[in-house]
Amino acid sequence: MSRAFVKEDAQGPDEDPPERPVSPQPNYVTPRGLKTLQDAEEALLAELKGYEGLQEVEGKKKRKRELERDLRYVRARLESAIPVDPAAQPKDQIRFGASVVIQREDGLKKHIRIVGEDEAEEDGEKLSWASPFAQTLFGLKAGQTLYWETEAGAEKWSVVTIAY
Image (cartoon, rainbow, N blue to C red):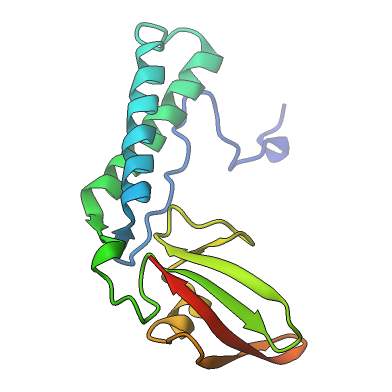
């Protein structure tokens, strides 16, 4: 077969999977986020133990490399972790670790928890501290408002409650 018909960037059986990118942002973590990373490290180590001595089986080799890559990522995140105790944050302001209820002008309420990047959920309740919306919330107090530009136009949000 001609090399013209072979996909050059396809991962071969002997190639390592691409590394998971590590954020350049400071790695602030909640106590729960730190525990999640520690649990992930333990789980990866336990699963890797089952792959000792299985270098000959192609499917097993690939999975072992993926586990090793994921372990490198988790360890890098653990090494760079900056634990933040939400109890030490100012109770009247939105900061890292806050659970916040905000209300849009039309009455829609949203509950948001400001967490570390590894804890964040896309379109979920847990919002990364580094996200633009979380950055806009930082420093606000209950009763204060913010304006947020969306594709549909500016939205007015009010901070209802802040808890840690």
